[in-house]
Amino acid sequence: MAGTKTIDADVAIVGCGVAGLYCALNLPHALRVVLLAKTTVDECDSMLAQGGICVLHDPDDYESFFEDTLRAGHYENRLESVDMMIRASRPIIDDLIKRGVRFARTATGELDYTREGAHSRPRIVYHEDITGEEITTHLLACVRELPNATVFENTCMTDILEGFDADGRRVCRGIVAEDAGGAHLQVNADATVLATGGVGGLYKHSTNYPCLTGDGCRVAAEHGVLLEHMDFVQIHPTTLWTQKPGRSFLISESARGEGAILLNDAHERFCDELQPRDVVSGNILREMRREGAEHVWLSFERVPREELEHHFTHICEQCREEGYDIFSEPIPVVPAQHYFMGGIHVNSDSETTLPHLFAAGETCCNGVHGRNRLASNSLLEGLVFAQRAADKIMRDRFAADTAAQLAVAASERSRFVAGSRDVTDVALLCGAE
Image (cartoon, rainbow, N blue to C red; front, side, top):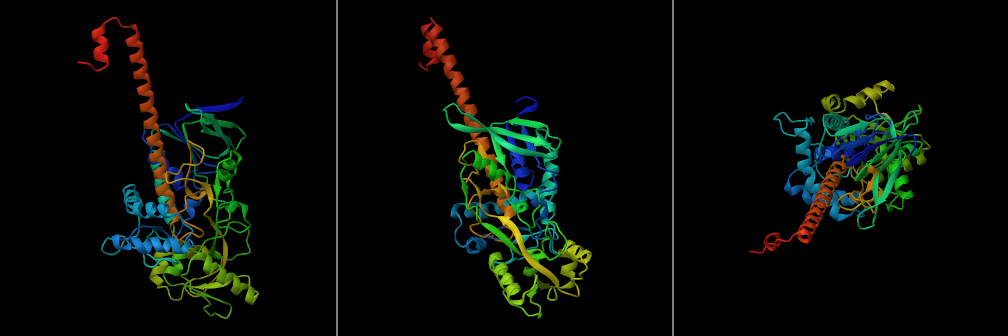
């Protein structure tokens, strides 16, 4: 391609949220990895996750965690994926802690667990109300230390490359991208991972960054890659109502998990705040229509002041900037688009229907979430299945290298046998005594 900078890599990763970063961190240093960020690396939805990340609290929690995830997803979840996510959750959290992620602790030093809507018990670990930023920032720092990884910011994928493998199968061979100045980049890669995030930038009101416009799904569809459940879009019940344009500010689910209640204009409760997100969102929208109101109210009157000061620091600050003091008055909230449960169909190893093309995080559909995601399962799901993508890439690479080595050995043996006049040498080569 004329005027295009070409880079040869082993793995190309599109997206620098938790899924893309964690995939890179789980690949061996012998592989050359290129990561692309559509804008800056800190402008990804992983940075915006507030409430926390789910983890299997203890072995006895498995069945309730499984059921909570299915109930929130209206039992349209892929059971195998839910099982994989839950069983991998504790090792993932342990690994994040080893990488420097600071989760809240109790007075005795144990992990502190909070609860959110549709959870039957506390099983969410967190860092204040900026858990996503805490995790993503540490993963990004770890990636920047990798000797084998290069990060390109302000570089937008425009297409994927196709080719054929030794068996004549159509496979993915990398990506094509364009930087902010219009320069073109071609990354040739044996494996490509799409971790391009959700679709919130296509909506008028969303908690997502505007740059998240479903690029991975669009490009995949153009190449005939199977998409799944594109109508599975989640509306979050509580974002801060404002007349200012721009991204909606999320009021974390954990606020209601810790006791915040929803009120109408008459300051009356009108629903169970700890139901799944789609149920609570529906209740709010019906109440708004009934009253002819632009929003409802969220009151923190039942949340201890100490909890507000230490757990919801940034929410307090944002509300204060908008002119609301959550310590003494309710705040106006309204539902907004928040998460995408559909996307590029992948199997349990995060591989799409095009060999050598993987997808992880919000851009893919591995079936974990069903029709409606359980709160705080997003970060966990992205990490678990990004790790599985890295594992599959390594297995494929090992199999390919082994096959190549066997082919070379077979060729050498054939050449040696054909050219040998020493029967003894031939017998030894063939394993005869």
